[in-house]
Length: 272
Ligand SMILES: Cc1ncc(C[n+]2csc(CCOP(=O)(O)OP(=O)(O)O)c2C)c(N)n1
Ligand code: SF4
Ligand SMILES: [Mg+2]
Image 1 (tube, helix red, strand yellow):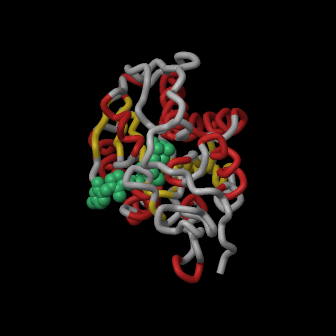
Image 2 (spheres, rainbow, N blue to C red; image 1 turned 45 degrees about the vertical axis):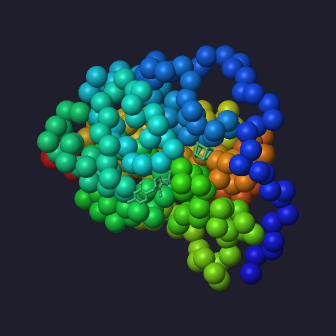
Image 3 (cartoon, rainbow, N blue to C red; image 1 turned 90 degrees about the vertical axis):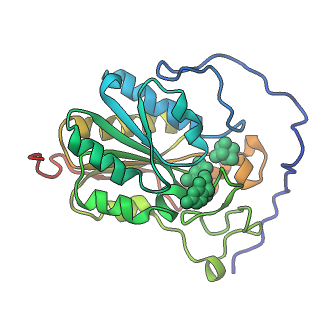
Protein backbone atom coordinates (compact mmCIF):
# COMPACT_ATOMS: atom_id res chain seq x y z
CA UNK A 1 0.00 0.00 0.00
CA UNK A 2 1.31 3.50 -0.80
CA UNK A 3 1.46 6.25 1.82
CA UNK A 4 -1.53 8.62 2.07
CA UNK A 5 -1.06 11.93 0.25
CA UNK A 6 -1.07 14.97 2.52
CA UNK A 7 -1.54 17.77 -0.07
CA UNK A 8 -4.54 20.01 0.66
CA UNK A 9 -7.64 19.53 -1.52
CA UNK A 10 -8.57 22.44 -3.80
CA UNK A 11 -12.26 23.26 -4.23
CA UNK A 12 -12.93 23.14 -7.98
CA UNK A 13 -16.67 23.87 -7.69
CA UNK A 14 -16.04 27.57 -6.91
CA UNK A 15 -14.84 30.31 -9.29
CA UNK A 16 -11.22 31.45 -8.85
CA UNK A 17 -10.67 34.13 -6.22
CA UNK A 18 -8.60 36.26 -8.63
CA UNK A 19 -9.45 36.96 -12.30
CA UNK A 20 -7.11 35.73 -15.04
CA UNK A 21 -4.50 38.24 -16.19
CA UNK A 22 -3.12 38.38 -19.77
CA UNK A 23 0.61 39.10 -19.50
CA UNK A 24 1.47 38.97 -23.22
CA UNK A 25 0.28 37.53 -26.53
CA UNK A 26 2.29 34.40 -27.32
CA UNK A 27 -0.02 33.07 -30.03
CA UNK A 28 1.96 30.93 -32.49
CA UNK A 29 1.52 31.54 -36.24
CA UNK A 30 -0.64 28.45 -36.87
CA UNK A 31 -3.27 29.14 -34.20
CA UNK A 32 -5.93 31.60 -35.27
CA UNK A 33 -7.27 32.56 -31.84
CA UNK A 34 -5.44 34.68 -29.29
CA UNK A 35 -6.67 32.96 -26.14
CA UNK A 36 -7.62 29.40 -25.28
CA UNK A 37 -10.15 28.22 -22.75
CA UNK A 38 -8.14 25.50 -21.09
CA UNK A 39 -7.39 25.82 -17.35
CA UNK A 40 -4.68 28.22 -16.16
CA UNK A 41 -1.44 26.30 -15.79
CA UNK A 42 -2.49 23.51 -18.17
CA UNK A 43 0.50 22.06 -20.03
CA UNK A 44 -1.43 21.10 -23.17
CA UNK A 45 -1.38 24.55 -24.82
CA UNK A 46 2.40 24.62 -24.41
CA UNK A 47 2.70 21.21 -26.06
CA UNK A 48 0.34 22.23 -28.89
CA UNK A 49 2.26 25.43 -29.41
CA UNK A 50 5.53 23.51 -29.60
CA UNK A 51 4.17 21.11 -32.22
CA UNK A 52 2.78 23.99 -34.31
CA UNK A 53 5.99 25.99 -34.09
CA UNK A 54 7.97 23.04 -35.45
CA UNK A 55 5.47 22.54 -38.30
CA UNK A 56 5.89 26.22 -39.11
CA UNK A 57 9.70 26.04 -38.92
CA UNK A 58 9.75 23.00 -41.23
CA UNK A 59 7.49 24.90 -43.68
CA UNK A 60 5.11 21.97 -44.07
CA UNK A 61 1.89 23.57 -42.77
CA UNK A 62 0.21 23.50 -46.20
CA UNK A 63 0.58 19.71 -46.46
CA UNK A 64 0.07 18.80 -42.80
CA UNK A 65 -2.97 16.80 -41.70
CA UNK A 66 -3.45 16.51 -37.94
CA UNK A 67 -5.67 13.73 -36.62
CA UNK A 68 -7.06 14.55 -33.19
CA UNK A 69 -8.17 12.26 -30.41
CA UNK A 70 -10.68 13.41 -27.79
CA UNK A 71 -9.56 15.30 -24.70
CA UNK A 72 -9.05 18.85 -23.46
CA UNK A 73 -6.52 19.54 -26.29
CA UNK A 74 -9.30 18.87 -28.84
CA UNK A 75 -10.45 22.43 -28.11
CA UNK A 76 -7.65 23.51 -30.47
CA UNK A 77 -8.85 21.45 -33.40
CA UNK A 78 -11.18 24.17 -34.75
CA UNK A 79 -8.59 26.91 -34.52
CA UNK A 80 -5.55 25.66 -36.39
CA UNK A 81 -4.19 26.68 -39.76
CA UNK A 82 -3.52 23.04 -40.69
CA UNK A 83 -6.03 20.45 -41.89
CA UNK A 84 -7.62 18.58 -38.98
CA UNK A 85 -9.53 15.30 -38.86
CA UNK A 86 -11.38 14.20 -35.74
CA UNK A 87 -10.96 10.53 -34.86
CA UNK A 88 -13.12 8.41 -32.59
CA UNK A 89 -11.58 7.85 -29.16
CA UNK A 90 -8.23 6.06 -29.50
CA UNK A 91 -8.51 5.49 -33.24
CA UNK A 92 -6.31 8.34 -34.46
CA UNK A 93 -3.31 6.15 -35.49
CA UNK A 94 -5.58 4.04 -37.72
CA UNK A 95 -7.19 7.06 -39.34
CA UNK A 96 -3.75 8.62 -39.78
CA UNK A 97 -2.54 5.39 -41.40
CA UNK A 98 -5.28 5.60 -44.02
CA UNK A 99 -4.57 9.26 -44.75
CA UNK A 100 -0.82 8.74 -45.11
CA UNK A 101 -1.19 5.69 -47.35
CA UNK A 102 -3.75 7.47 -49.55
CA UNK A 103 -1.72 10.69 -49.66
CA UNK A 104 1.96 9.83 -49.13
CA UNK A 105 3.04 13.41 -49.81
CA UNK A 106 1.27 14.76 -46.74
CA UNK A 107 2.72 15.14 -43.26
CA UNK A 108 0.37 13.20 -41.00
CA UNK A 109 0.42 13.45 -37.25
CA UNK A 110 -1.84 12.51 -34.37
CA UNK A 111 -2.51 14.45 -31.19
CA UNK A 112 -3.91 12.29 -28.40
CA UNK A 113 -4.02 12.18 -24.63
CA UNK A 114 -3.02 9.33 -22.34
CA UNK A 115 -6.65 8.35 -21.74
CA UNK A 116 -7.42 8.43 -25.45
CA UNK A 117 -4.27 6.59 -26.53
CA UNK A 118 -3.39 4.19 -23.69
CA UNK A 119 -6.81 3.41 -22.22
CA UNK A 120 -9.21 3.69 -25.10
CA UNK A 121 -7.04 2.86 -28.10
CA UNK A 122 -3.91 1.06 -26.99
CA UNK A 123 -3.97 -1.55 -29.72
CA UNK A 124 -4.28 1.11 -32.44
CA UNK A 125 -0.97 2.77 -31.64
CA UNK A 126 0.86 -0.51 -31.04
CA UNK A 127 -0.20 -1.94 -34.39
CA UNK A 128 0.53 1.30 -36.28
CA UNK A 129 4.00 1.32 -34.70
CA UNK A 130 4.69 -2.34 -35.49
CA UNK A 131 3.59 -1.79 -39.09
CA UNK A 132 6.15 0.99 -39.29
CA UNK A 133 3.60 3.49 -40.56
CA UNK A 134 5.30 6.70 -41.73
CA UNK A 135 3.26 8.83 -39.36
CA UNK A 136 4.17 10.85 -36.26
CA UNK A 137 2.14 10.36 -33.10
CA UNK A 138 2.13 12.73 -30.14
CA UNK A 139 0.75 11.75 -26.76
CA UNK A 140 0.04 14.51 -24.25
CA UNK A 141 0.41 12.59 -20.99
CA UNK A 142 -0.99 14.13 -17.80
CA UNK A 143 -1.89 10.81 -16.18
CA UNK A 144 -5.60 11.64 -16.00
CA UNK A 145 -8.76 11.77 -18.10
CA UNK A 146 -8.58 15.56 -17.81
CA UNK A 147 -11.64 16.56 -19.80
CA UNK A 148 -14.05 14.31 -17.96
CA UNK A 149 -12.94 15.32 -14.47
CA UNK A 150 -9.45 14.02 -13.75
CA UNK A 151 -9.90 10.27 -13.37
CA UNK A 152 -7.15 7.65 -13.26
CA UNK A 153 -5.71 6.47 -16.57
CA UNK A 154 -3.35 3.65 -17.49
CA UNK A 155 -0.37 6.03 -17.17
CA UNK A 156 -1.25 7.44 -13.70
CA UNK A 157 1.81 6.87 -11.50
CA UNK A 158 1.68 5.12 -8.14
CA UNK A 159 0.72 7.60 -5.44
CA UNK A 160 -0.74 10.09 -7.95
CA UNK A 161 -3.89 11.84 -6.84
CA UNK A 162 -6.77 11.65 -9.33
CA UNK A 163 -10.53 12.09 -9.02
CA UNK A 164 -11.00 8.42 -8.15
CA UNK A 165 -7.68 7.94 -6.33
CA UNK A 166 -7.70 10.93 -3.98
CA UNK A 167 -5.33 9.07 -1.65
CA UNK A 168 -3.02 8.25 -4.56
CA UNK A 169 -2.89 5.34 -7.00
CA UNK A 170 -2.31 2.11 -5.13
CA UNK A 171 -0.70 -0.81 -6.98
CA UNK A 172 -2.66 -3.47 -5.14
CA UNK A 173 -6.01 -1.88 -5.90
CA UNK A 174 -5.39 -0.13 -9.23
CA UNK A 175 -2.44 -1.92 -10.81
CA UNK A 176 0.72 -0.37 -12.21
CA UNK A 177 1.14 2.40 -14.78
CA UNK A 178 1.87 1.53 -18.43
CA UNK A 179 4.98 3.25 -19.78
CA UNK A 180 3.89 3.45 -23.40
CA UNK A 181 7.05 5.00 -24.82
CA UNK A 182 9.13 2.20 -23.27
CA UNK A 183 6.83 -0.40 -24.84
CA UNK A 184 6.89 1.19 -28.30
CA UNK A 185 10.67 1.50 -28.24
CA UNK A 186 10.85 -2.34 -28.20
CA UNK A 187 9.07 -2.69 -31.54
CA UNK A 188 10.70 -3.15 -34.93
CA UNK A 189 9.27 -0.66 -37.42
CA UNK A 190 9.65 2.16 -34.94
CA UNK A 191 12.20 4.77 -35.97
CA UNK A 192 12.04 7.17 -33.06
CA UNK A 193 10.63 7.32 -29.54
CA UNK A 194 11.18 10.14 -27.09
CA UNK A 195 9.57 11.49 -23.95
CA UNK A 196 9.63 15.19 -23.18
CA UNK A 197 7.84 17.51 -20.77
CA UNK A 198 6.64 21.11 -20.63
CA UNK A 199 7.14 21.87 -16.94
CA UNK A 200 10.29 24.01 -17.39
CA UNK A 201 11.68 26.22 -20.14
CA UNK A 202 14.58 23.79 -20.63
CA UNK A 203 12.23 20.85 -21.02
CA UNK A 204 10.10 22.77 -23.53
CA UNK A 205 13.22 23.45 -25.61
CA UNK A 206 14.31 19.78 -25.44
CA UNK A 207 10.79 18.63 -26.31
CA UNK A 208 10.74 20.89 -29.35
CA UNK A 209 13.91 19.21 -30.58
CA UNK A 210 12.22 15.81 -30.14
CA UNK A 211 9.17 17.01 -32.08
CA UNK A 212 11.47 18.29 -34.81
CA UNK A 213 13.28 14.94 -35.05
CA UNK A 214 10.02 12.98 -35.11
CA UNK A 215 8.57 15.04 -37.96
CA UNK A 216 11.89 15.10 -39.80
CA UNK A 217 11.84 11.28 -39.77
CA UNK A 218 8.51 11.33 -41.56
CA UNK A 219 9.80 13.82 -44.13
CA UNK A 220 12.65 11.37 -44.84
CA UNK A 221 10.30 8.37 -45.14
CA UNK A 222 11.60 6.62 -42.04
CA UNK A 223 9.39 4.43 -39.83
CA UNK A 224 6.91 5.29 -37.11
CA UNK A 225 7.88 8.19 -34.84
CA UNK A 226 6.48 8.90 -31.42
CA UNK A 227 6.85 11.69 -28.88
CA UNK A 228 5.21 11.51 -25.48
CA UNK A 229 4.93 14.90 -23.78
CA UNK A 230 4.29 15.06 -20.04
CA UNK A 231 1.87 17.94 -19.41
CA UNK A 232 0.60 19.61 -16.24
CA UNK A 233 -3.05 19.15 -15.23
CA UNK A 234 -3.42 21.06 -11.95
CA UNK A 235 -7.20 20.72 -12.13
CA UNK A 236 -7.17 16.94 -12.49
CA UNK A 237 -4.37 16.55 -9.96
CA UNK A 238 -6.36 18.65 -7.43
CA UNK A 239 -3.39 20.84 -6.58
CA UNK A 240 -2.60 24.55 -6.79
CA UNK A 241 -1.77 25.73 -10.33
CA UNK A 242 1.67 26.96 -9.34
CA UNK A 243 2.59 23.57 -7.81
CA UNK A 244 1.94 21.65 -11.01
CA UNK A 245 5.37 21.95 -12.75
CA UNK A 246 7.15 20.64 -9.64
CA UNK A 247 4.49 17.96 -9.13
CA UNK A 248 5.23 16.75 -12.66
CA UNK A 249 8.98 16.72 -11.90
CA UNK A 250 8.60 14.93 -8.56
CA UNK A 251 5.85 12.41 -9.36
CA UNK A 252 5.40 11.79 -13.10
CA UNK A 253 8.91 12.21 -14.50
CA UNK A 254 10.66 9.72 -12.17
CA UNK A 255 8.38 6.97 -13.57
CA UNK A 256 7.91 8.19 -17.16
CA UNK A 257 11.56 9.11 -17.62
CA UNK A 258 12.48 11.93 -19.96
CA UNK A 259 14.81 11.42 -22.90
CA UNK A 260 15.20 9.73 -26.27
CA UNK A 261 14.35 6.04 -25.92
CA UNK A 262 14.97 4.95 -29.51
CA UNK A 263 16.60 6.60 -32.47
CA UNK A 264 17.06 4.44 -35.55
CA UNK A 265 19.06 6.51 -38.05
CA UNK A 266 17.73 4.50 -40.98
CA UNK A 267 14.29 3.43 -39.75
CA UNK A 268 12.32 0.76 -41.58
CA UNK A 269 12.62 0.41 -45.41
CA UNK A 270 11.12 3.34 -47.31
CA UNK A 271 9.44 1.60 -50.32
CA UNK A 272 5.86 2.28 -49.17
C1 LIG B 1 -16.13 6.29 -26.38
C2 LIG B 1 -16.02 7.46 -25.44
N1 LIG B 1 -15.81 7.22 -24.12
C3 LIG B 1 -15.65 8.26 -23.27
C4 LIG B 1 -15.75 9.55 -23.72
C5 LIG B 1 -15.59 10.69 -22.75
N2 LIG B 1 -14.32 11.37 -22.82
C6 LIG B 1 -14.16 12.52 -23.53
S1 LIG B 1 -12.66 13.22 -23.31
C7 LIG B 1 -12.21 11.97 -22.27
C8 LIG B 1 -10.90 12.04 -21.56
C9 LIG B 1 -9.73 11.98 -22.43
O1 LIG B 1 -8.58 11.93 -21.63
P1 LIG B 1 -7.18 12.16 -22.28
O2 LIG B 1 -7.11 11.49 -23.58
O3 LIG B 1 -6.16 11.77 -21.27
O4 LIG B 1 -7.14 13.73 -22.55
P2 LIG B 1 -7.09 14.95 -21.53
O5 LIG B 1 -8.48 15.42 -21.36
O6 LIG B 1 -6.45 14.49 -20.28
O7 LIG B 1 -6.26 15.97 -22.25
C10 LIG B 1 -13.21 11.03 -22.13
C11 LIG B 1 -13.16 9.80 -21.29
C12 LIG B 1 -15.97 9.77 -25.09
N3 LIG B 1 -16.01 11.00 -25.60
N4 LIG B 1 -16.11 8.70 -25.92
S1 SF4 C 1 -8.60 19.64 -16.92
FE1 SF4 C 1 -6.35 19.42 -16.97
S2 SF4 C 1 -5.85 18.86 -19.12
FE2 SF4 C 1 -7.94 19.74 -19.09
S3 SF4 C 1 -7.68 21.94 -19.53
FE3 SF4 C 1 -7.72 21.69 -17.28
S4 SF4 C 1 -5.57 21.50 -16.66
FE4 SF4 C 1 -5.67 21.10 -18.89
MG1 LIG D 1 -4.95 12.93 -20.06
